[in-house]
Image (spheres, rainbow, N blue to C red):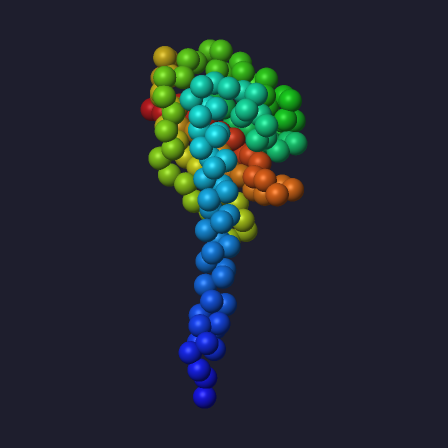
Length: 137
């Protein structure tokens, strides 16, 4: 017959994966907050620090796989043509494969855009693997 301590240990074993998932989500949330601020402030230095060594990129005027340095230049050019008025995350989530995504709305002086980025872990931190900006209709 099992005693109360045994039930407690069994319960903790089942809860440990939930605690680990919460830690991963809080780590991602911190990165998402920094990236959101970087986009809102057009801070390409901070944003590019989150780029993978190669990024699947799709923004007006550029579509393809770019190196980190190329991706930074493409974003700089985009921001020079579109003054960001506001940027807010509207939805985010994760996959079982350990990727996290965020979708946000960006208002600029010319039009509104939908922004999507997909991150995965690299050497203990999360990096942007895909980055998209699409004009809203």
